[in-house]
Amino acid sequence: MAVEGYRRFIEAQGRNPNTVKAYAYTAGRLLGFTGKPANSITEEDVIGFLSTVEKASSKARHVYALQDFLKYVGNAVAIARIRAPTLVRQLE
Image (cartoon, rainbow, N blue to C red; front, side, top):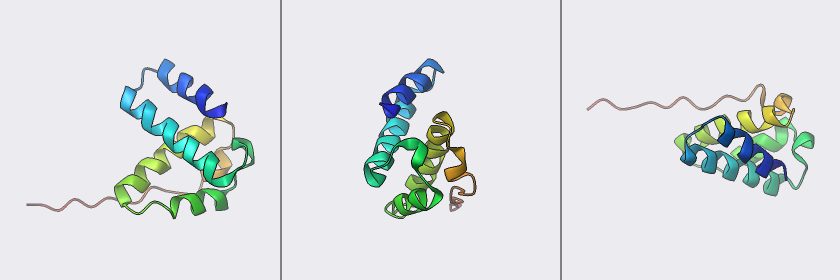
């Protein structure tokens, strides 16, 4: 239920449809991974979930999505100290 409400919320903000789909997917994966309601998720849960993501670019997107989702559900504390990895681009 939290994920569907979140999806509607970010759609109403006029976010890109691909962003809406990706962020809602990430939120749903986190809830499935933890088996907890969104307002009960801890920082340790988020770290555990992010450890399952291999690519730095994917991890960064997940962090941004989770920051937004957990703020939406009133649980920003769970991700307050977690930062997205810095992505380094190689010059050609």
